[in-house]
Image (cartoon, rainbow, N blue to C red; front, side, top):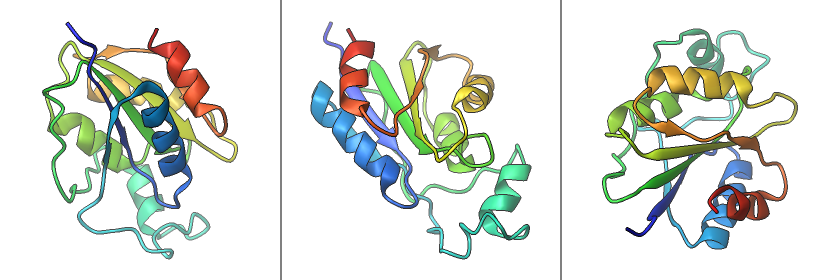
Length: 154
């Protein structure tokens, strides 16, 4: 059977989008953006504001922002999931995505971008959200995303 690969990502500022496109290009994968039904404004992204949307979402582990559209993961064997790290974890929209499809037995490879936080906390939480997937150790890919992706899918 072919290893059909999908690269999914959520990107608020374009940094994660660039990494996702690099990964998809390097491994010959399809690509799909995880878009929130209500886009994030710059005020929503203000991490200094304790009442900003992203700050409030990050404090509520059960928060599940609605997606603008579902992403069909059924045809794929391997799904890369990319996101910026916010407050030491994945944005809540990633949890919405992981709960929206059947990932049972699918290989999931997380990747993230961050100015300082690691990906480990996100990986632990994502495994709890989607325990039926086959999880592959992810990576913070502020640079070298394509080369890393080629190595990880060998």
